[in-house]
Length: 148
Image (tube, rainbow, N blue to C red; front, top):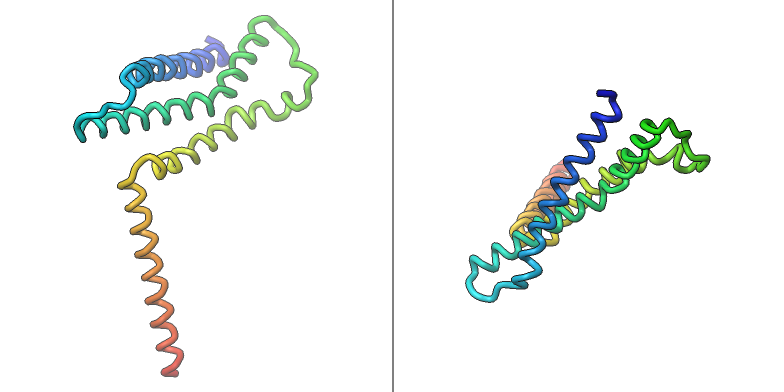
């Protein structure tokens, strides 16, 4: 297989499987709405919504890469010239392969912080511990300076 065909298979089959799992996970969420009874059901509901959000962010952020790869494959197969659009010529790979992938990676911790209370508590606890550490170091430094 030529490189572009292999890349196209990888970049289209993987997102297609993610998209199918996204659809399969969102259908029960839409049908059942929010479960009322039981703490365990509520936790399952929240986890399902979080996983669905992660999948949606992945699909949206990687969509430009999938489109650019498909366009490259079509140009390769049909021996088409690159469009005269200079923006696409210079930035499609940069935006599709790097920028939106980095945005997806940056949004993951934000989604964790927003959706998971335990993670939020841990982050705030770490921040308080760091603040106390800095204050103790400053106090120790001023004590050393006053003795000298």
